Length: 187
Length: 422
Image 1 (tube, one colour):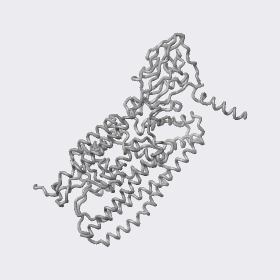
Image 2 (cartoon, chains in turn brown, orange; image 1 turned 90 degrees about the vertical axis):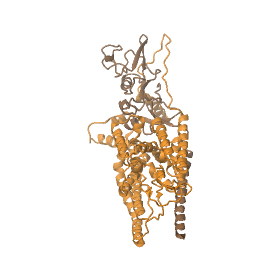
Image 3 (tube, helix red, strand yellow; image 1 turned 30 degrees about the vertical axis):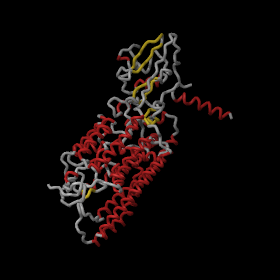
Image 4 (tube, helix red, strand yellow; image 1 turned 120 degrees about the vertical axis):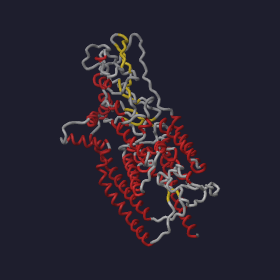
């Protein structure tokens, strides 16, 4: 009987030893990150200056329709009549005919403002984030169209599956308070 | 001085050149047209992140109460369904303590990554609870556990040698997850999470097929992911070993009636031991295993160091650097999208190569530690098998018991230690 009691206490001793060590470890983890932790959360965003418009954003999001959409910085836009983000490389005519458009979903609206200026707005409900228009605008225009993670849609996965597929390393975690990286007018 | 001025001018011009200059000046409208403003929808409110933490605390407390105090399997079951709905289907499975292992590893080894408080809290709280109450987190808080638990309809008994060997997989997965996260290469635990695609109701075909396989297997083998893969279970097993309180099969004194013997679908019930014979033989085996431990660790570490370089190819920067080098030396004639993208940036190659050398160094050290860890795990398992623990009653193995409470109903002992009539 005595031996049994001894055994039990030995087991208890080992147990409390493990518990103490684990508590120390957890305390250590907390202590280590106490100064470094970030009160606000982190969210995913595309650095538009790194983006190469490869089109992977459209296919690699865990959402059926990607959380990445095209956005437009109107300050940078030239309001061109012949918009290389809107039109095919060889359009039949400069009108809103579907065959002339670059966007596979017709998600860009072209509105006449005044001669010779046209305004291009993105219909986000149609945009799939393929970046075709972004490429066109970047290659021959001002580059005022660019891709961004839209945070009303993004699930903020711990491991962003588009970031994993991005060939240009353009995805990064940004603080919750500044969730967008917009293109700015240069010079 | 002139040079400095020149340098400043070049630096000022460069970004414009690199990012495309204004080809067409923005118009000045005569009609006074106002430019539209691009909307910037906010991410999910931060308040909700803190709500998640509160929900974690509440469900953990409730689970511990239901398991240890109330001893209610039914309560744990419904709490599990709630957690599945909340942390799983509503929160879409992110962020969870299992995945947080990777954030913590990355934060430890990459000073530029600063983890959000919510992630740290999600990592620490379940472990802290386990230190006091056992694995109540697994019982009915973890959505991955809950989805398997409710589908377990016809549990088969897994032979203990299969159970033990498959259990090593979880340690390997844990080690690999930490290694790849710490080197900033990948978050494989999230990438290969078999159930998260159900929570999001979308995902790649392969991962959905894997998930369905897990659920089908899970109908007959109790919680296959939890027992044989879950990386967080490694930490929970350890903390549960040292838990202050833990669920017991019998609410009072065990009467060794054997009724609970086969009640656990997870093989966590340990029978009372027979009277030991041949103590000397056992001691010999134990000594041999203890001596074997450092050998296994050393072998593992050696193997890990040499496996570091092949493993480093998981890192996309390493693959990119190799590709760029191959293109430069004429080993391949075409280019790839990543290499084109890299050349498109003005970044010098030496910088990339230097970065990759650093990553490779991390992989050599990390691979060694990983290998040593594998050796330690296998060695400890062997020692554990040669240890002869004495048990006088049926008890739940603290490290593998999930506190699900299935065995409660099998025990005829009532709370006040009196034996039930039936």
